[in-house]
Image (tube, rainbow over all chains, first blue to last red; front, side, top):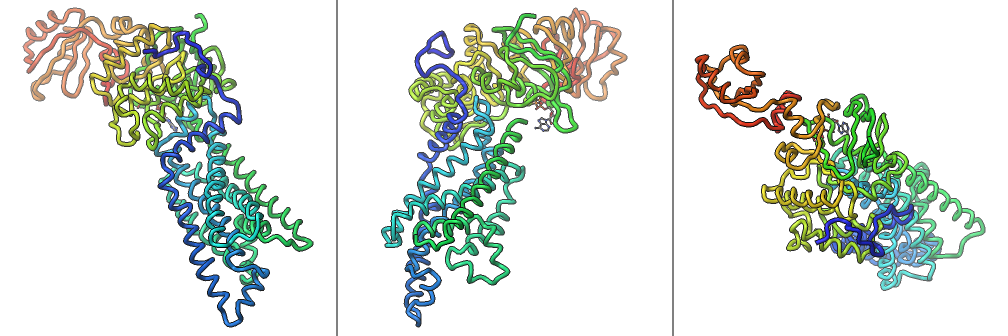
Length: 286
Length: 307
Ligand SMILES: Nc1ncnc2c1ncn2[C@@H]1O[C@H](COP(=O)(O)OP(=O)(O)OP(=O)(O)O)[C@@H](O)[C@H]1O
Ligand SMILES: [Mg+2]
């Protein structure tokens, strides 16, 4: 048995420090391995839950709207004339991306630092703390893309897809999700406790965000004082983008608004990524 | 001293106000097994983490494999193997996957890590459990896996922080034998342990740390000669009959009082035992033995090993 390098050199058998991007991809590979083994456990929450939302609101509630005394006229006015399901679908895509981003960036991150401590194992290799942070976020992005893609297919089966623009919606959803993931990941990297603060995040940030970001009804139906709350919500920006892509027909000022939404999400993402890289580096270098 | 794989001068580690390592000089020579002994909190692991290039030093100079960890951390880490004090396996992957995925971080090809994992599974005697998840493994098996994992990149320098804690005697002896093989192939090893027999068996040279400082350094034999003398008489007394140190001191070189025993250090154990008897002292039991590193440790740190 050959326990130590006894001079044997074969291609691929010599250890070295992988480059910046390579290191990040290796962290993604690690999570992908984990996912291949454990996807069943997460499939339920990442696909089944949005599916239920789709059934309850898109199909159930949507038919109620259409059957209203005005024949759905008021609802149609709010949705710009699109069927409710078609109007709702891109927003659900964004919502599920943000929810899964929040989930993936809380307990799993704390576990990497505290319970399983696998981040410490990773940084004992040539990989750096910043690469671990980027690898985690890239993986969350990939996973959102994957489950979002499946979700698009499901929506299409229910007749909620009006055009190929839904693929643009998927990208918008992933962008919003990535912005949320990066910020929450950075926050999780500062937690020393058992994750009790995460309950507060879900209760006071994520849940209100999903309710008041224009997913189920346009934000302009909210009372005036509540509308600025939606404007700071990354999910609202993601929802507006996702809808614009899926429904098309942008008004003249529409492209400028798209630019604002994208810019806002990119700024959040940049801040979150920067913070996450710094905080991972600091915590893993004790 | 020639450029060994590890050279430290005035090495320090601070955590906020608290200084865990307070200025140590370390020189590890190529191919040797070097030990860090010391009571809990002495600063052994803090030192090991600085050498492993995961924890930046607070002060002093440090060279590992001829490079500066602050500047070349990833390049150094590519060439060393680390067994941390606390296991950090991925519990939700299988035993084999843990080896393979860890190897990938060193830029090794999938094919290579696959073959390497098979070898290391043999090494750790975990082949039977290769495709089980890590979570349900026993503590000793996890430890063996962590040790196997540290070898995945064929390291030139191996850092083992209490590698055998939690291993059964058979696994410990097997590991000693494997570490000896590695040594024969020229792999430099740095090891911390609370087991003195292990230190005597494995280490060419060692240092004793206490309170963040190195308090003694040498080969096991040198340390024993210098700090413990040749022989020890271990006496146990009934509490009410236990003599004071002053009563025992005239008969030997040095007296050490432990909660359950009194240790007499001397060049001639038999003679000391007779002298004690002539003085009218009646221990419940008396045992003459050779001095060990344990006695050195006790002398230098004022503590027994496992406290
Ligand atoms: N991350 C940290 N933050 C603050 N203090 C720390 C940290 N790590 C270690 N210390 C402190 O530094 C001191 C030395 O710790 P270290 O782990 O190096 O000791 P050790 O010699 O390895 O002990 P043991 O035999 O128990 O493993 C201890 O007092 C410990 O509390
Ligand atoms: Mg320690």
